Length: 158
Image (tube, rainbow, N blue to C red):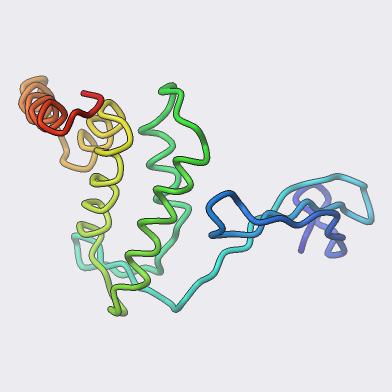
């Protein structure tokens, strides 16, 4: 593993342990050249998945894109990092176990929305505003009204 600080190729694993949800191995590493320490995560990848974008462009599935979007939606919401990782791992698992070599970005977006709806209503609305391209305040109002209805009927956090 290359050191992110000095780009040396020789690093040593100092500690390994599973994450709380057992979907990854967390490794603490130290560079033999500069002595810097850093963390890496090792995750299972069942097979190569291609994401089909709305413009029919295709690209390899990238977990970090989902993680970045969910983290942004959850920003300043006090949501535990482990809960975000569990949501992202759940979406990744759904994509990989679908049995399909290709999955639409729309399907992935819906999986993320389902997870966020259960996790936090504000993060859910934030993600939806980008995912569904809200253009006016009215779009937020209408969507928030449906979120409140769902939260009331499910006893959620709306």
